[in-house]
Image (cartoon, rainbow, N blue to C red; front, top):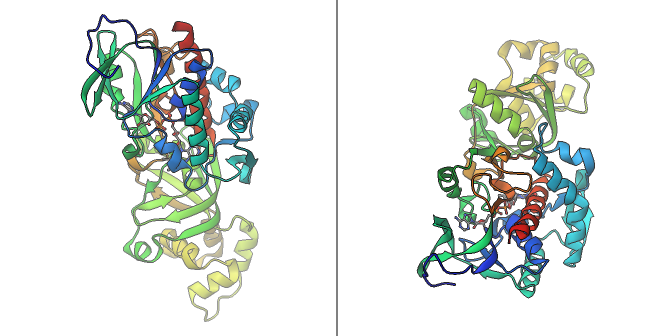
Length: 415
Ligand SMILES: Cc1cc2nc3c(=O)[nH]c(=O)nc-3n(C[C@H](O)[C@H](O)[C@H](O)COP(=O)(O)OP(=O)(O)OC[C@H]3O[C@@H](n4cnc5c(N)ncnc54)[C@H](O)[C@@H]3O)c2cc1C
């Protein structure tokens, strides 16, 4: 299989899966489960590198939400093929599948599901071992570059290799963290094959803010815990996200920022900037806060007065001062309003290379209900390279393995 052969030779595999991340591995598992000869090809020296990095802070494998609550996480206009994939392989199925590998899971904060040891490596190791036992072959350092006739072409350390398979599943990932393998090199190849691709954009990402030097030098790298963010989306709907905010020298990061990233990114695309509103005192009522701030200040410094009346100090107070109009510091009602809704202007999303995930990708209109490309029969697409978007919380991996399972099963029908 690793030597150059003429294009007219018989097929080497029933199913070639290109991309050895969670979507591709699940496609391989589904295709091999009924005896197909399956080969996985990956550009990197080992499979699942992004999956391993996802495990560094504790692998959030899936979520405990099911049914409509789960589907709602993937946006208002859920493509039918994605809905069907998630219905057939939902969060319960992800946990059962992990248990089948001997990896028990638990439900943590806000319904997120983690392996009991929080790690990705043991799960990946067992998964790869089981796939090998089932007969799946792995071909590392095989970078897919397109087709020559009906053969798949790969760049390898030994030169170009051509492979023939009855069906192919592409699971090449998005464009974030390209050093882990998913560099979106597939976009021009698929576009040239007549497959419609929505532009790849950062999702679950940080944003840029033009901070003053004063704030940057004092607050960069500092978290502000337990705040609530909100923004108004392009349809006028207010979206909120509680959590911890991280101030950086270029702007903002943090789970609550990522949760709103879709709406913020869309607003910036439409208007050149977006406004993020920060409730710096979510436990306090605005009216009570205004009353406390209205008490005579006497000879106290502004910082002392603010801390006594509102408990705001440190980075929280620095951020307030950054966005507070001068006149408002003398007006308790305006001051209370700003504490409850400190407006931060966002200039841009951070580069896609830094994002947790990618939005955009192969449009569902370019695929049939089995995730097969309309323009290229027997080519199936799975995982993050598809045009869906979801927040963090285990929803990303859930959709990757669900679409991987769907594409793998469907490819078997063609093999
Ligand atoms: C820091 C970080 C933390 C994350 N944490 C979580 C989390 O806790 N929970 C969660 O749900 N999600 C998390 N994610 C997101 C999740 O890891 C991804 O959504 C998921 O890995 C995507 O799976 P995939 O199989 O579609 O693509 P990938 O995992 O990106 O795999 C794609 C594979 O394709 C290969 N490839 C690419 N191009 C080629 C080519 N031309 N030829 C051959 N092979 C190629 C790559 O080498 C790679 O192995 C995190 C992401 C990051 C960056």
